[in-house]
Image (cartoon, rainbow, N blue to C red; front, side):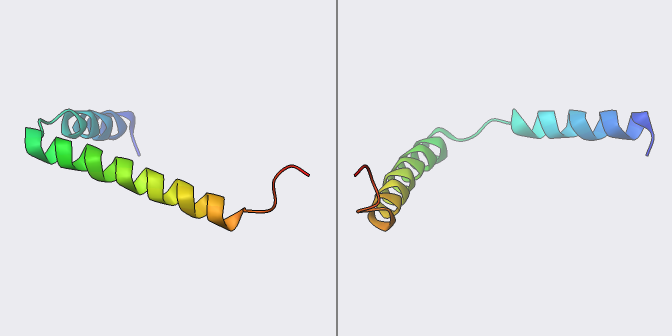
Length: 54
């Protein structure tokens, strides 16, 4: 691969990453990500129960 190809690929990725997102979609994503993080945290706590400090 040549350098020009790598730079073009990086530029395309950055442009895609900074594309606008509809406000309601962003709110839903933040809300569902928060819920998922809490659920996964509770799951990990459940799996490691009783293995804490002695």
